[in-house]
Length: 213
Image (cartoon, rainbow, N blue to C red):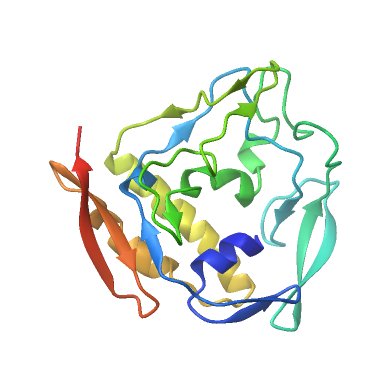
């Protein structure tokens, strides 16, 4: 979670001995186009450590783990996986998540990847660089099903940001997330899409991105 904390922070902080400072953010309107996964994919489901807050529902096998933020030790509950495996241990043979309803926040954050950034990206996908990833079938593909912008998607992204803000609050890291939530509807109107630039003082500018389909 250190990477997301570094992206959204509004003040300097120390995470596990690494120092991070706030940077301006660029928000693509594609943030509001959420994605879903087809069967027999699982390309994004790698054997990462699955972390949960103490207040979240976590698997029985999860163990307490200390993370030091600003010299204060915070406890999360983690399932540490074998990084030599190709896929997450919770991925079924059909490419579906066996713990979908209780999957950790990290697994829910795919719609944010490449859509809220520190640098300007004209074309983004659900992977960090648009790279094709290995699916459970052995193919390399990027078959994510991308939805169009809708009010339901705005609500979904807003809820996702609220969940991430809970983590920021737990680690006592000040963030830009509430400001981003205020500005979600500025990413589009009936006919056009806009890109937002948010500086470290929370001021924003809006530029034309493209015509809305």
